[in-house]
Image (cartoon, rainbow, N blue to C red; front, top):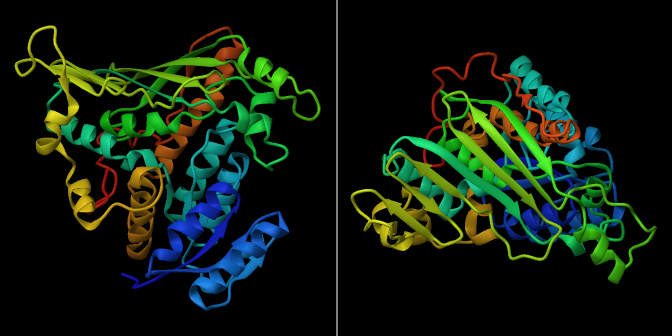
Length: 398
């Protein structure tokens, strides 16, 4: 195993700069050798931050393809706009680099296949950095599911429920990619925060898979009303429905309900619900009901189960001291990437996971456009989902 990891970082907007300044530079076994962004101010600032923080030179590139040629790199992290994740990740794998990329939905099934083909042709590992898979609640739920507390799983729910009206409307000024998504698309644009953890609980690609989905979108009112009071440049027309509802059917018979709700006033929630033959969990009320443990027609607080079912990774993490953003899960997903990259090990979230989760976006767009018609998922694994094993090994396994 390598003692340290020499990385390139592509994409230095809000997410990329946060990862660099708040997490990567605090990791003694990580060296940032090169950074890349289309915008000169971003890349020069990032290179200077690295030089000041580590006292070592850091190359700055405008073209990611030049960064991939940088001698001595062990891996690359991609935090650019969603549109480019698949192409950049595939190119990095073909350069022999251990690759990680940030979350987002696919623009097309071809992008998903790009990832799969690059892995199968090079056998260079690639990990999607879905931080919510390492959230404290999500990992505790995963542990509860695998301990059989809910019985046989039947139905799961989740979503991305987040008031993004200001962020979307000011996307052009802030050089943010979300604006174009909401003016040209209509589907579940951001499914993986909820779907990723649920997919792990349902053994997707490891004995189970997504088979088909149906999606419907509501009318678009939220952005129209918000921009009437806060006019952005250009008087844009927003095509994205305020609430997009997607139902997924799994090979073993489970169903998953996803909600994308980002342009109406509301507090943040991922709205997880995990339901099986012996009980269920509801995130929005932080409640569980377990047959034989909970009083009939009553709820228990999830906190009453924490001592018994806290995930082992989080038990040790709490003892060590939680750090980083998003309540600590950003640090865990990055440490998972770093440890697996140093060991050149199979990542806990691999290209088959990424392809299946990302595909929801373009498939939901198709279903919405067809009036809610069923749309089938490709089998990105080519049948390897049958009898597949758990994601990764070691401390950060999922």
